Image (cartoon, rainbow, N blue to C red; front, side):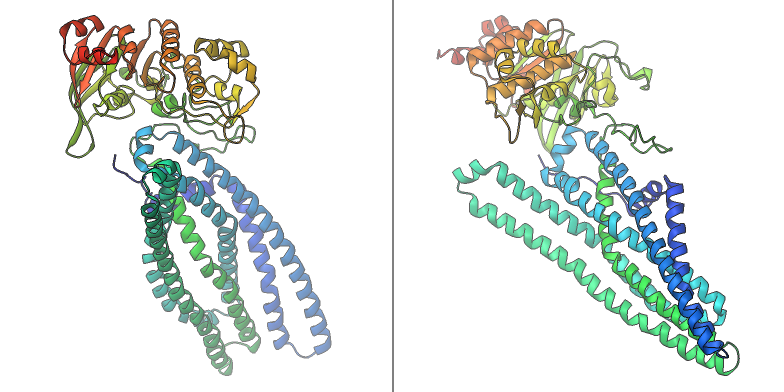
Length: 633
């Protein structure tokens, strides 16, 4: 399967999204801007008073004392207002950041499983870790610095115009330099910072693959090749970092040089105006001090541009998850009106494939009150979905389906299959025949390249996540235990379930004895009690029992159990799921023996289809598999 990175949001969409986030809190934003404006106004008092002092020398001692006292008062007031503004900015920033994180989590949960798999581990992990961290730093430091600087610049320029409109013109001498430098920098910086973030994703993906496949790396002596891959990724990241730093090392010195021009021009031009009686010496003094005072905010603004660009690149990558193809249509986490404090914005419901896989390894129990698959799969479809999309029955129909992970290489070739409601179908065949791929299409995780997969006459790919979740659930051979208690690992599917229901589900899969001996409140998962592989699989199947889905696709769900335990477990599940549609993909042929029909796959096609006894009597590929499985030539 080729890796397809998640998209990156365009600059216009990123800016619009950031603006919507900020404008969702108009009162807090107005308070922040007002406090910074008052602080900047207090900062203007000093140059204005000094300008008056230059023009009023008839009562030197008295004027100087009064001016010094007033300057001290305004400096103190500026300090207090700046502190209040910084506190208000921090509160607003954390509120916006929390909403952004909640929205991002909702977008991630709404990603189809196929999209997550194609994106690769490094891309999504980097977005959920480094990009979130970079954006948080930007919101906490760079954004307040930029807002403070912009307000101070605006207020100071206004004061400069009030003191003497003619004295404002010398400041414009730096505009052409700043405009040219800014145009050059911003035309290159976005792509450079996006490439820098992507380079971290490549490093994360390479290291994750090496750690997860450590046994294989060691067994096949691949350490040298993996180290070489890591060196290449680090070299790429180093080159990306050099590019961004190179842009800043050209841009910032030009800006620093441009600082000198307005001050010198104001002194020279202001002095000429004073000689001709066009302005007073006090006005020239105040204007020069205002221009000098502008340098601090401008300097702070320009030095924050690097962090702002990095934050914008991270926001574009986070926002890009919302634009991922095939993403579930959950309700956006940012409603038009701000949420009440007691009801924070909740992530949208997960897409059906994601929710189904939560039965095994897709959702953490840290918040069992709102899991991605909390509603039973048999629940009624969401009322908001169009009535025309409601399946008329629960039968699955596959028509001339072809599917390819890579262009030009079909792994399914012209599959035709009808599965009646309540039927138990076993799909068997050698490894690489396409069994698991067919299971993914039947579960709605992937859409066929050509042909159709329908339930009740409606294409699975066209169903809303809520309706799809009510039709089918996929349980794979990949299992997972989440950090938390044993009870949390079960409640992730049905948070309202009582202990009696949990025990019933554990009993149904043969896990009640060891689970109660361990205790439902016992902590399991990373850093806690380790469960044997067969117990992990039983726990995953107990989640399935609690979810109570109407159609199941079991992709070798008992592969880690010994044959006797697997057969006992499958018989228990068969009795429990009587009347439901079950599609079992397995190598163990006793599953096929108990099924209503058996589909034999070879080279991406269904080569045989019928009951166990029919296929054995036919003497074809299935009969050969059955004889071989029983040890007969």
